[in-house]
Amino acid sequence: MEIFGLIWITGVALVFSTIFAVILWFYQPTRPFSLSVWTTPPIAVSSLILIRWLILDRSPVCGPDPEWDRCPSARDNAFTWAAWLLLVVLVATVVFVVQKLVTSYVNTHLDRKLQPSTAIDDGQSQ
Image (cartoon, rainbow, N blue to C red; front, side, top):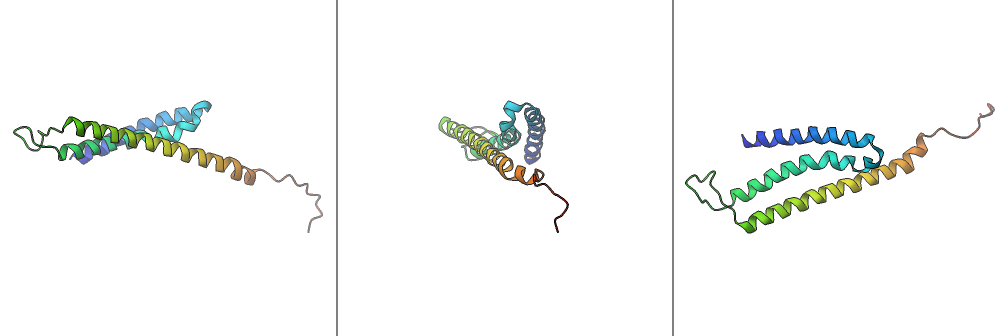
């Protein structure tokens, strides 16, 4: 059942990030960040849940219920938060660079192919 919660909260994050990315797309100075804003929140939410599940499943039992009473050490908590933060920053950076590369390619190569030809047709070509 927990996986359905993960899917649901990731979907909610995707909906809100889509709305925010569309708003950023129409505001010219923030357009280079729109793909990062669209993809990073769902990945951040799902990875946070998965990383925290991983650390909790591997922690020692500290209460009467072995399923729910797990107590990770402070070092493990700090490590998982640092790993999650590094993952989120890395994803946002990679997506930003990919968007810059795609935009650069479109602006240099595809714009030339889409522009009409400037050659004058005198009607005598065979």
